[in-house]
Amino acid sequence: MLLRILRTYTRPYRAVMVGIVALQLVGTLAALTLPSLNAAIIDNGVVKGDTAYILREGAWMLAVSLVQIVCTIGAVFLGARTAMAFGRDVRSAIFHRVLAYSSREVARFGAPSLITRSTNDVQQVQMMLMMAFTLLLTAPVMMVGGIIMAMRQDVGLSWLIAVAVPVLAILVGLVISRMVPGFRLVQKRIDRINGVLREQIGGIRVIRAFVREPDERRRFDTANTELTDVTLYVGRWMALMFPLVMLVTNVSTVAVIWFGGLRVASGAMEIGSMMAFLSYIMQILISVMMSTFMLVMLPRAAVSADRIGEALATEPSVVPPEGGIERTPQHGRLELRRVSFRYPGADQPVLHAVDLAAEPGQTVAVIGSTGAGKTTLLNLVPRLFDPTEGQVLLDGVDVRNFEPEALWSRIGLVPQRAYLFSGTVASNLRYGDPDASEEQMWEALEIAQARDFVAAMEGGLEAPIAQGGTNVSGGQRQRLAIARAVLRRPEVYLFDDAFSALDVATDARLRRALAPITRGSTVVIVAQRVATIIDADQIVVLENGEVVGRGTHDELLATSETYREIVESQRQAAA
Image (cartoon, rainbow, N blue to C red; front, side, top):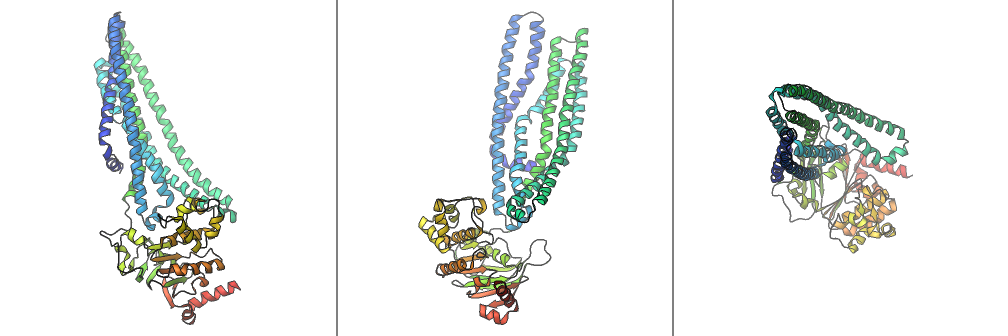
């Protein structure tokens, strides 16, 4: 998966990558040339006292060093830019894929995991790629080139290379084999701690209201300790790696000086050649150490790439049709035919053979006990889910055959949990109509019974809204969400228990103000409160996912035992 992601998202940068490879190759060859030039200066210049030779060869060394510096800086600069561009492209791909997910896929991965995959996992692969641009070609060329150049200096010491390199490779391999499982656990532990933090921050009011701070601290401590333990486990092995590398490097240096000194003393080797051999064996071991950096990052990057690939490879269960319909001759007729829906892994369907029809100008209400499937039914209309059986029709056309934008533009949804985005009142309202004027926004706020409190806010329409709308009350959030839907002037209004946070008087005023606006539209209201739906043209009673009653308020009082129980329970509660 790592290779596939790298191949896919580095394709636009192939020309730059060729330049990086060329710069790395030239810089590495320059680095390999320097010890030979130094040996020549010592043997032919210093020993013989030839100052002209020293100056001439020294000038060549300076020129080669300058080439090495320029090429190394250029390779690192271009490599960093390319790696950052790669990370940007992968994050963008994950973001656009997640936007295409239905609620089913989002629930499957979970928001904390998707956030980790878009940030931490991408960063791991990005860092590995940057290291590859810097070291991938340099390390093998320096290793092979160093071995060749060292043997050119003196074959008699080459056995030291044959011992040092395998020993170092074996030690590094043992350490890496212990680190790979740890890296997999680290990413899972990060998902876990993100999930705990997200729940605790989002539910801070509930935690405080039920005095659950000690329990939540223990839950966070557990997740934090698990992440700390596995990170320490990986860190210990990582910390062991570099001392091992330095141990082999230092022992090799001592061995070269010891055995090289003996050969120099016997006249079998020049002092300059021994110094060059020492430089080359250091270059060889440094190249192994650079490879170690890559090997440290490779397993973690591979784990992250698998997680990224899983997110990118997951196809949305709600798929846009090819050549979807954009317009219909009718305007707003909604129908559900024998609709059933089962959540993945569930034993029983949430909805079973539900029939419902709503004409433009009609208000259809859906009522039932908690868990009856009311919200699920409403979510099928804008294709947040697709039914497992049956059809959802808009103007006689299955909603699965519409272009998504064409479908959503005709629907105004006010969800059960009203959500506002960070920004201003105006920016939130313009989700309904990006081109809305201030006058239109104030009109929508008037209808939603939100004008007074928005006018009282500092800045009015430009008053700041925090993420999730946490700086306004629940009732104010609901009214702003209703205003946002009203501003769109859709053909179908879907109110998912959208009046639950309003007092009875505000609820009544809002519904009176909505009546002239929704006169030509289809309105479907999910509600718990009978007073909210008492004037509906048709009330559908759901119980355990099945329709057990249908009619007006008066008709259902006479024919539906379930509806009578709901009405009676609310009367007793009011009393």
